[in-house]
Length: 297
Image 1 (cartoon, rainbow, N blue to C red):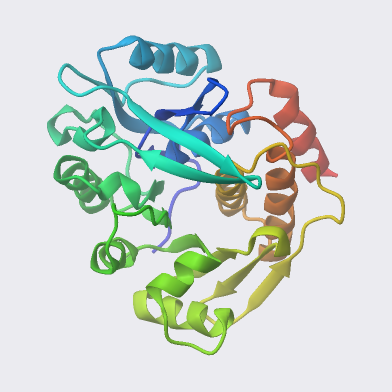
Image 2: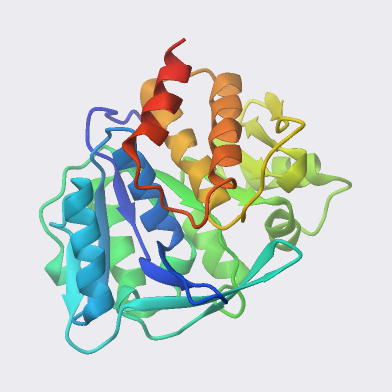
């Protein structure tokens, strides 16, 4: 099904604060990170989520306004607090304690604004862990008939193979990492064979798989495959949000009609720049300007 790349992309899901061991609080949540980057790329996304009537929720709304993002689809919850995640770093790798019953679990289908259809919708799998937000997401997918990009985030205990499979059904594109692919498709001699099984099972147009320090690959429905590896020297401050930066450039490439190989290369370049920063959201516009200028050359 054709989609209209001129329609502002929709991003659905969690927004929260990542809390680090040193006391730092950084805006996060995979969908929010993606929307933040897309705004940096001048794509004016519509971010659909819910925050509490609390100081953290007000900070999120203020940060979005300061960035020039629309808050028309950011709901406020009088009962449930804004999301938080406790981040622990061991050997440079993050682990997450994702607190339950947060405002983003209760996105209200009846409070959704009028939204344009036939565009691109990005969401993860964590956003459907609770019935309220799952119902709102299902409503958007059915009513707007968007071209859907599912970013698989398997966070125990907030996922099941059946639930993730249902989200992948009807999706056009999907992204996940090697560990997540092995959990969803345990059968298969190697990672590429597992990827082919997942593409066939859900009728995906393109599957993107990230491989950590080894880079990433993309597999199309027709069996074409493209690989990318990171540069030899990458400065790593922390890897929180690297996959979200990668996803944001994949979306940029899909909307701008880039070739698959160049989309992967640019996504890897941007993700490598993200890991050189603390946290997943970058405030400086020049960070994005330089990247877009490099893409234009």
